[in-house]
Image (cartoon, rainbow, N blue to C red; front, side):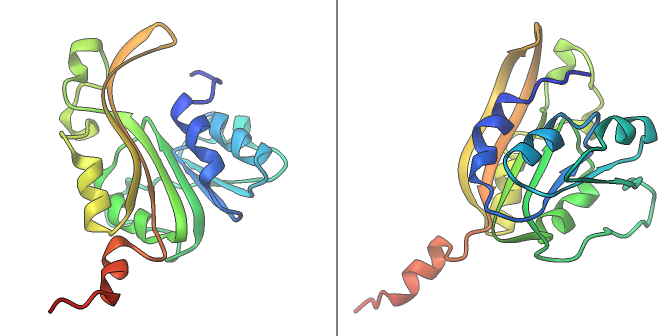
Length: 185
């Protein structure tokens, strides 16, 4: 597993306002450590104790949670996190609750494999691959304002993959709110 911070996360993490950040499926903590250097307290979640041991450090609270257990409730309350970072992980039943835990003006940074990635290796199971436009649809369903979106082929660490990436904000004043003051005659 790479210790290099994803360029996507590195690019958009500075947009996260002050506050606690969730690093979901944190792996060995490359993004948790980066977020701490930006001044955030981090909750790092993974189901692998070895990964959490590698992640642990000042400013990082690790949590051994298997979020894929059938019927397991989402363990975090609404509007809690200033930012949520997810890379190389997809478990669709979590998506709605995860976005619900994003605070007003909080930033979602999500990057994972997309449909068609089987041509380049694993993951190849459609359960772990985003469908075309799936992250955009997630943002639309939850009223998030999209800052940036990419869907396509990347070549990182000498490995090609098809990925989808989004940076979106749970804006205090979404576009629809801006239209409320307009009166049509």
